[in-house]
Length: 99
Image (cartoon, rainbow, N blue to C red; front, side):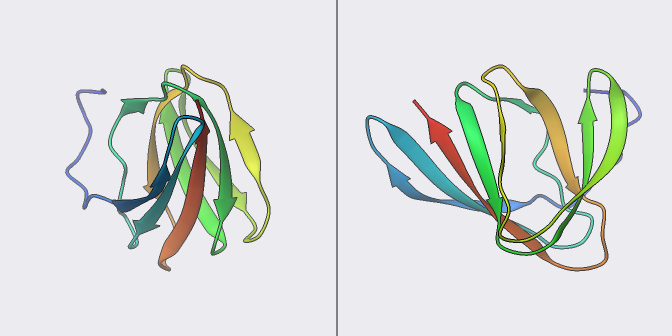
């Protein structure tokens, strides 16, 4: 975690399903909220329930990405980052981890 990180509100999450094959989690972010730095233990797919304006912090720095609601993207096991709502509106997505 970068030493200059400021304190932000935390995103909330609820596990909707968790079995031997998948874990499905809903993430909700008020403006400015973050997940906190974490490492993904599984490949995963994200489907936005709202339009997303994400600030992604990772080992390569920080960048802002927009993702349209109803779309999908995936990342590999081992992804390490912090996800921040960089927009002015509430945002939400569903994360599906493939075990």
